[in-house]
Image (cartoon, rainbow, N blue to C red; front, side, top):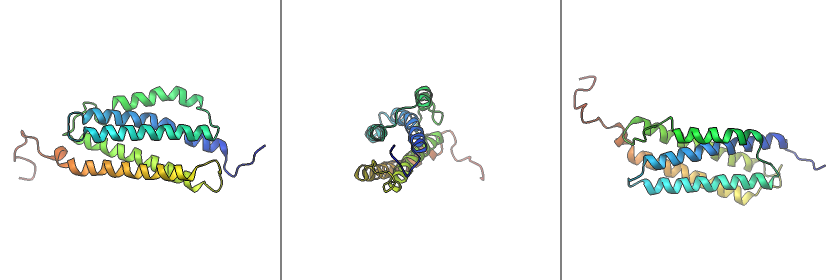
Length: 176
C-alpha cells in the first residue's frame, strides 16, 4: 500500500468541493455573459467564461491524475449548483446599471479568489504529494490572478454606470 503524507480522503473531498463550486461558478459567469451581452464588455465576459471553463477541465484532469473519482455528492449536487448559477440570485434581471450588477461582479471576484487559493494551497503540497504538477499549478495560479485582474478592471471601468443617479432622481436626493 502506497504511503502519502497527505490524507487522500481529505484532499479528495477538498478538490470535489471545489469542482462542485466550479459548476456554480461557471454558470455565474455564463449569467454575467448574458448581463453584459451587447456591450463593449461582452467579449471580455465570453473570454472569462472560456478561461474558467478551461480551469474546470484542468481541475477534473488533476483529480483524474490523483485517482479521485467524482463522488456521489457531486453527481447529486451538481445540478443544484448549476441551477444556482443560472438563476443568478445576485442580478436576476441581468441589468448592468443597478447596484445588483456590482454585487454580481463582487461575487464573481470572490469565486475567482477561492479558486486562486485552491491552486495556491495545492502548490504548498508539492513536496508532500509528488503526483501534483508544479508547472500546471503555477500556470493555473497565474491564470486565476489574470482573471481577477480582468474582472477588477472591468468593475473599476464601469462602476459609475451602476451608481449614477437615475434620471428620475434628479437633484432632489437626501441631504439637500
